[in-house]
View 1 (cartoon, rainbow, N blue to C red):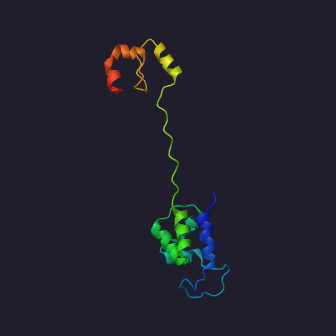
View 2 (cartoon, rainbow, N blue to C red):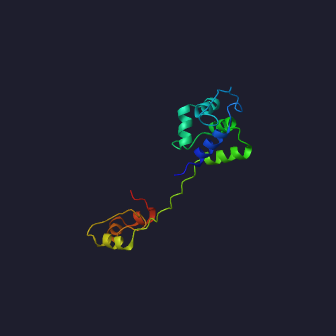
View 3 (cartoon, rainbow, N blue to C red):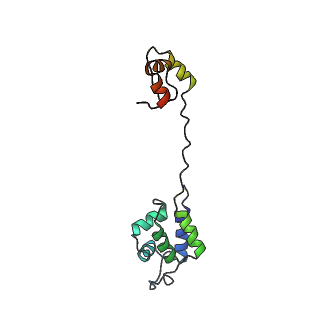
Length: 144
């Protein structure tokens, strides 16, 4: 699964010079921009947590964490809003309600049994259950 949040953070982290973030120059760097540990320190989170966020192993940071990272990376309002949108968990699709009707073939099978059957659909008890329980099942619909 693509990790747009991590990719955008990594790209912005590489563009942000340590001096821009308020850190003293530390001489030669193998990679451009801030180190993960520096972003984490300035944002007030652990380096391990920041690493998990950037790698996509944790995809739901809190709003204050996203705001702190946005501040450290000096994101403009549109970029910060984009980062917040990426951090919001997507709502899961609501499960479609299942039909609570007993298939006609199952009803025929239950009606053919020589004993009273009160099954999952209280609106359609078997003929024997109706004969045994009568109006209790017909009026209340309560399976107890």
